[in-house]
Image (tube, rainbow, N blue to C red; front, top):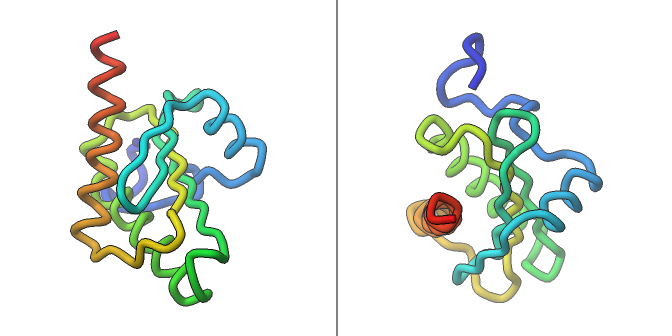
Length: 123
């Protein structure tokens, strides 16, 4: 995390933006599934954690898709200081499972990151 940004901010440098970046994470990353998400996690090459969220139209209306993206970004933003400093995450919201509440959303994402980090540290 850079020293000049507030602790719980979500600046542009912490976002996966281009299709090329999404593809790289999906290609190199470990795939983990939870009830509501498919999460790809890999070590970041840029030295800080980044997040990308994919929500297809099959999930629901624009309001529903935006809420899913906001919840994922919020969970990442609030927990980023406690996460390993060099992760790239791509979160794909599964269609047809409804919108989880914030606590459930956050718990699933942290569980997926924990599983990845545990596997990585064990070798």
